[in-house]
Length: 501
Image (cartoon, rainbow, N blue to C red; front, top):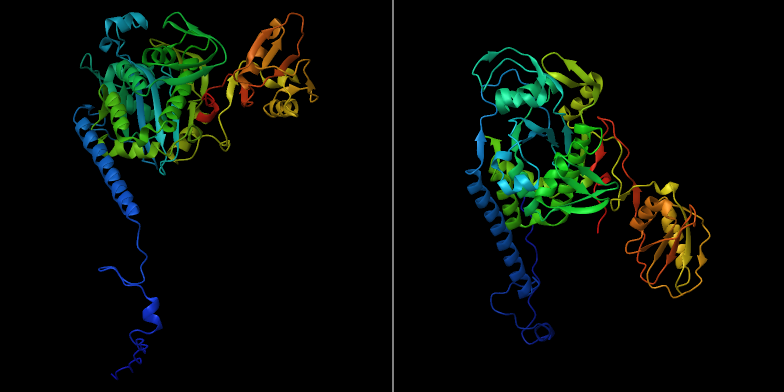
């Protein structure tokens, strides 16, 4: 085979004579420095080195700490010998159950938070938490505790007897067969394969809320429940562990009982996600360790839910926001479905619930509407569209009245569109003047004007008056209190969390 011709060698220009113009222009090169490469400032090198050390150390701390915690997690063999299971879909499905663990709570906390009585050895809360394959969305489906269910064949944990399938309320499956029967029953009802099992009791719940520094929730109406001791006036509240437990356990606030409680639990989870993702906690390895220690110190999990899964979940949650979480309750077809020997149950709507569980299996969002951009809106007791407002400018700032009028109209208030100047142009604090008969409307307007003063004026009538003062800073976005949702309707986290302080 002939040898290919060689390319001619490149010509190298001759070096200029020493002492010539090029030598005069060229500065002496420091030893060890290559020509043609700009020198990196020393502080840049140090900063990059320090950052690398911090990142590596943080990762090491996180993995080392979680590895030690992994050995402390109470384990349950939730999937032992399970056969004929549904086909796995995309994403990860966690069955999250809240158990009645009042026997682990101190006597003082039992009295304070109304946790008296014997534990029922049942599941107060049952949820399927679906984490999308891309780890950018969390879908939470609440399964009512009183749902009509049919168990598969199993051995009763209490009596040791072998049972064939029989009807019961869903939360009773735990008492008969523990986590395994609960998972099998849920899989049979939903045809959604459960990947992991996590069991939270009263103690771990309260510790988690406390280590987060409390969770902020908002209510447009007062919430009072004599059974749990919950007593919250309308407004925003930062709930600590015990108060948060009262909030999510309350079933006697209104006539909706458990369905209303599940809605509050969903609101609380959305606020929990908001708190964890907006505060930078998940980016701080030591705080992440403290949260993980609080959660895992008193939970039970399946044997496969270990350090790697926790780290992956923590990394995923760093990309979460309230708008990337969505919540719903399985659609109900028949309320009060009577079953002999079981009592009154809730029977799922077969068509609507099938669509819901299809979405989980196929890793599709439950909500069909796109997320809104911007800050969450503060819920208020009266729809702004029902509130008539006249704006007056109580300052010497030209155009302030028109600016406030337009901003209030943009968030839904029925402004007159013709702001006027107040009698005195030296108002320091913004005032909302209202007829006492329209006090709920006044509170709704006050939520849009933070720091304003409410002033009752008998006989003023239905139109509220805003007298803008020198302290005015902004008009906050508000929305009417969430209307009652039917089971099966989907709500995003950003639609139910409080507005930013």
